Image (cartoon, rainbow, N blue to C red; front, side, top):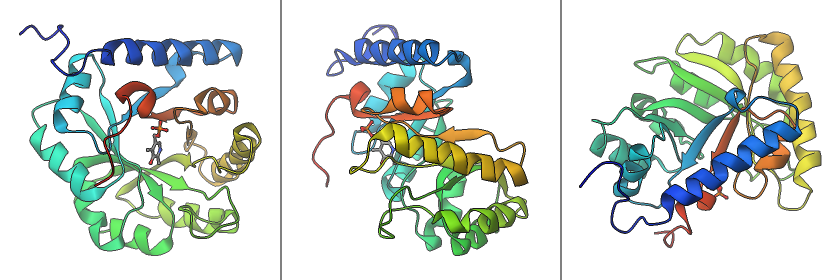
Length: 232
Ligand SMILES: *Cc1c(COP(=O)(O)O)cnc(C)c1O
C-alpha cells in the first residue's frame, strides 16, 4: 500500500485534518496573524497507535496524549516515526520522570511538587505552566495567584525549557472571555520569562476563539480523529 493512500478504517481522516487546517488558517487571517505562528497538536487519546501512524502518513508531527500509560505505550510502539509527543493530561508526580522520557513537551505543569519531580528528569523538555481558568480547584491547573512563584521555580529548573502557559476553557463561561484572561496570565509569565511566549489553548470547539486571543499551540482531537472510542 502506498503511504499516500488512506489506511483502511481511516477514510475521512485526511479530509477532517485538512478542514481543521483551513479552519486554523481562516481564524489566523481573521485575527491578523500568520498561521505559521501556530502549531497543531492532534490529540489521539483513546485511539490506537494505528491512527497515530495514519496521521503521521498525512504529515502530522505533533501528537497530544493525556494518559501516561497509554502515551508511553504508543510512543514506544511508534518510536520509528519522527513524532513529537505532547503530554497534556494531569500528571502524577511519581510518573513525571517517565513522561519526560517520551514526551518532548509537557503542557500540564501545575504544582511545585511536579516541578521538583521533573528536575530529576534525564533530559530537557518543553514546559508549559497550566493555569486553572475556573474557581474549582479540582480542575487541573495552578491558581492564578501561583503564577509568579511557579514561573520562577520552572526557570530555575534546568531540565525544563519554559515555553509559556496552557489552559482548558471552562464549560460554564464563553471561551473568548476565558482566553482573554489567559492572555493576561501569559503577560505575567513573560514579565519574568520573556522567551516564554507560547500559549497552549484551543480544542475542537473553541480553537478560533483561542487563536483570536493569541494561542500558539492548538490541541485538537475529535474534529480530526472523529469521535473517541469509549473511555476504557
Ligand atoms: C482531549 C483534550 C483535548 C482535545 O479535545 P477535543 O475537544 O477532542 O478537540 C485538548 N486538550 C486537552 C487537555 C484534552 O484532554
